[in-house]
Length: 151
Image (cartoon, rainbow, N blue to C red; front, side, top):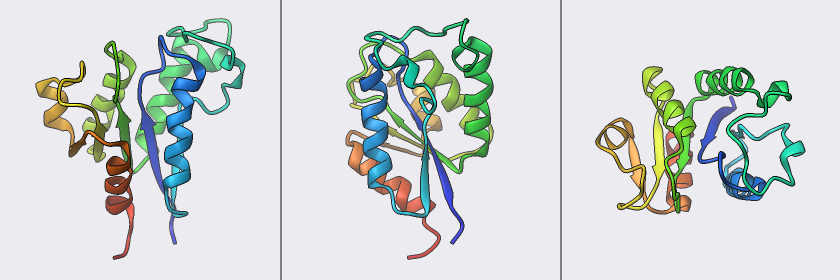
């Protein structure tokens, strides 16, 4: 069976390493074998001690503004869908919004987990999202359903 790729979008700037990776690891464990989670935090264990991740680290090529943009854009392009986790967000994640725009431009299915009063709840975000739910497990179920080739 051909493998599907699911890109995991959510706040990174201003949150801890654990806050940016724990939910992504959880999603990865819940996906069936034919769906692989793709995380923008892969290969970035050097940020493990960060309590508030900066928007870029220019001295580290993979975490420089060009490095982040280049790899994240490539990931959105090559993935079959994106799952966005905005649950509990306290400030707008500009990078996540850009990734949503890329996904929409390339007509990738967009699944968003966010509360009704979430700071990201904006007419344009709601319009481009194929699916919006207030539960991460529901978002995982939707991603699994749309990326599964069989019943």
